Image 1 (cartoon, rainbow, N blue to C red):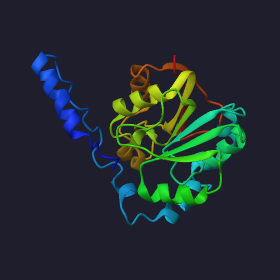
Image 2 (cartoon, rainbow, N blue to C red; image 1 turned 30 degrees about the vertical axis):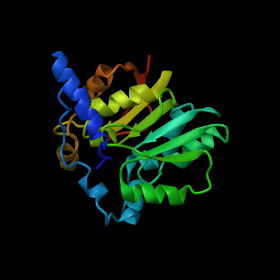
Image 3 (cartoon, rainbow, N blue to C red; image 1 turned 120 degrees about the horizontal axis):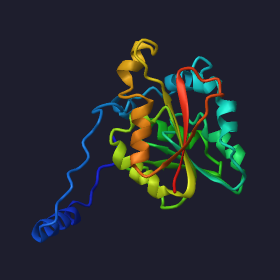
Length: 234
């Protein structure tokens, strides 16, 4: 799904050096949900179908979009990373908030969505479309003031690696905002129980383990199926 690592000769040399020195070689992080992004990586992805699904008023985060964007307190000149930008539901709003002196980095792994984003935001100088990797958001160190991860974290197939790349990309004092689905047996819809691998407590613990400090959960945004967590990069 994400771009494969092509520097195999250098990787082999590094591994050989570690082996020769007796230093332990960390095993690659295993996938927490193999195939979770398979349909988005398909060459025949029906992007227009997802525009309707992702941006329709029946989707809670689409319906509450003005309130969610306002809760971020974005300011002109800020750099915002829209992680898993999808069809671009939030990217345009972020660009309007940060203005011509700011920038929005719309990060995606889906070839179909990447093409759609480049077309949708052609000519928008403040929006840069970035092709992410399966283990990395592929952003420069310290380049982000706020990373927005909305209904996307449960699609991180390698969350520890991806969070490490986010920790590097977010400048000290910057924020990571995580919006995802509640997963409460007996209350949550069965489809979500099957689709989302873990609940809020697990996801929060994973983000904190990656070096982020939990700041707050905003509970006054009219969300019922989703939660809104704010973290800071120390």
